[in-house]
Length: 461
Image (spheres, rainbow, N blue to C red):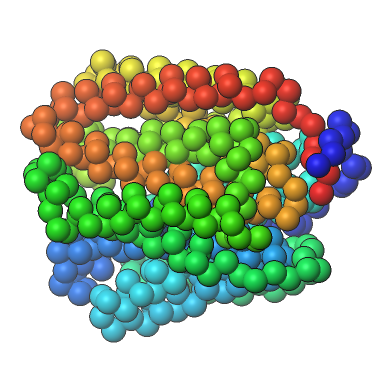
C-alpha cells in the first residue's frame, strides 16, 4: 500500500450526504422511538416487561450480527446494492410489525429491521471514506454520528405523537421513508464492484455470527439479582463457553482463507487493533447511560417519563459532541480528539459518581458524558478505519468497529446491572458503578496515546 499526503480533489456531494444522513436517522430512530411504544405493545399482546424488552434486545442483537456480514458484502458487491438491500430489509421489517397479529410476529419484524439497520451505518461510513476528500471526512462522519443524538431528542417526541393514533404508526412511518431512500440511492450512492469474485467465507461467517449470537444470548440471560449462580447455570454457561471457544477458531480459520468475512489484515494492523479496542471501550462506557434514568428516579423521586426529560441536556450534549468531534478530527487528528474525549468521559463519570445525588452536578457530569461519548462512538474511530484501509476492506473495517462497540455494550450492561443489584439497588450503588466506569476513560486515553501521532496520510484505494 502506498501513501500519499494529499487527497485527490473531490467535491463534497451534499445530496449524497443528505441521503446517508436520512438512512442512518431512520435506523437510529427505531431505537429511540420504541421506548414510548413499549407500554402500548405490552398492553396489546398482554406480555410481561421482561418479554417486552426483547423488542429492543432482538433489534440490537440482529444489528450487531448484520454489521460484519453487510459490510463485507458491500466490499464485494458495491455500496449501492447493499445499502439499498439494507434499507429495503428495514422497510420490510416495518411492514411485518405493522401487520403483526401476535407478539412473535412483532419480534420477527424487529429482527428483520435490525438485520437491515446493521449495515446502514457502516456502509454509510465507508461511502464517506470512498467519496469525500480526506480533509472533509471527519466533519462528514461527525454529522452522521450526530444522527444518534438527534434521534434520541426527537424520537420520544415523534413516538408520543404517533401513539395518539396507534402504536403501529411508529413503524408505518418508516415505509415511505425507506421507499424514498431506495429511489434516490439508485443514482446517488456509488457502486464500485470487485471485478474478481472469490468463494464466500461460509465457515468464517457462521463462526463469527454464531459466537456473537451466543455471547449476546448468554449475557442477556444473566439474572442480576443472582449473578454468580446464573453465570454457571445451563441458561448462560453453554452460550458463553461456545463464544469463548468459537472466536479463537474463527481467527485461525480467517488466517487460512483467501477472502474472509473479516480480512485478517484488519486484525493484524496495529492501528486498527487499537481502534477496535477503543470501540470496545466506548461500548463499555456507553452502556452505563442505560442506568441513568433509573438512578434519577431513585435519587430525585421523579417518574420514569420525567427522568427521560432530565436526560435532554446529556442528549443535546451528544449531538453537539458528535459535530465538534468531527471538526476536531479534521483539525487536530483522531489521536488527540480521542485523548480529550477519554479525559472528559472519566471526569463526567467521576462527577456523577461522587456528586450525582445533587441536581447541578448530575447535569454537569451528564453533559460531559454526552460530549465525550459522542466523540468515542463517532468520527475519530470511523476516520481511523477509513485512513488505514484500502477501499476493498473499508466497510469490513467499519463493521468490526460496530461489532466491538456492541460487544462492549452487552458486557457492560450485564455487569453493571449485576453490580447495582448486588449493592442493594440503592442510590449509592448507582454512583459507585459510575465511578468504576470512569476508569474506562483513562484506559481510552492510554489506548489513544499509543496511536501514531500523524495518522493523516491517505492510503490509496
